[in-house]
Image (cartoon, one colour):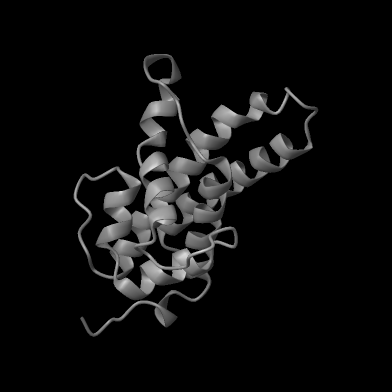
Length: 150
């Protein structure tokens, strides 16, 4: 039986990938038609994925929703696997200024972009995409990264 949290992650991830690919193939200026739904769905996928990883590790995530907080609760090996799975990052350490900067930017994207008219919006769509895909790669063989003896 598939873990319902992993299933939900994959459903939102697949939709976000579809939107991302559509965004890349649109004419200049039209790609924004897909940006908001990509950011909302991709951010929710990341939240669900990080929560699923935490549950596999036996770590309670509480009612946290910020991606940075959820990411930081994961075991070091899981955090490293996610960062190392992001090809555009030059520094592949979990504490690199580049990674921390962009993780901070996307951390509350789900709330901010759902209510786009209430906030000044900032994101890094490539970072969000790679972060989401890297989370998914951990699910391909999670117990390579998760220490079950802790």
